[in-house]
Length: 219
Image 1: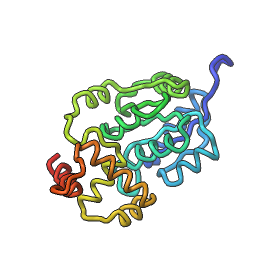
Image 2: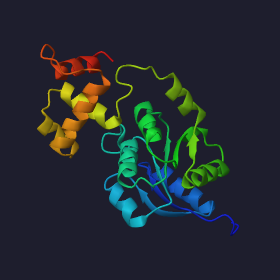
Image 3: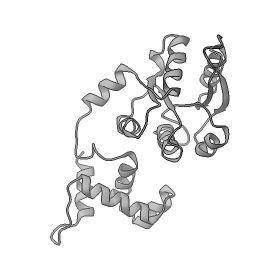
Image 4: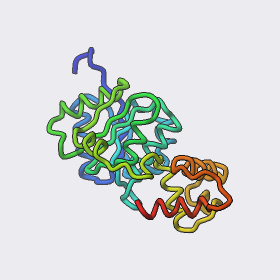
């Protein structure tokens, strides 16, 4: 690799052992250093803070539930360490969290689909662009984001949707705080944001918590 093209320190989060090892070899072939290859996103913020990678590459679906742990962890990293470039590399398009990730302050964001990466050069170029503060989006991700229906919940962040889902399950703010490992005050703020975004103004005739749940169930 030319000295004019510096190598990158990359942190990889991918649950599939074979795919993880394959990506590590591709990174090394491109001249980069994989500072960590993780099978889940547990303690990802601490790992990023300690190792200070140039780019974090993560899948969307990771243990334990294989739903959205990866992209939620990416959002958590961006909130805790906003300067961290993140490249989501997945088979799935998670529009809600993708929109929130892109809406965050600063650049350094990418979302590519695994089966549409056709060459090592494509991956190398994406990593470098994200590391430089740019944005890289697969055309299919763009299409899904643009065509996603604008339901009443479309403006909610991923965390606000999580809180609303637990509200719909009948959980108290204290229980929600415990489940999400956040403070009760943070839950109250998220609930207030949900009310505001759904246009539910305070009224003695209406119970906003019930109305918010109805909006969630009718999505």
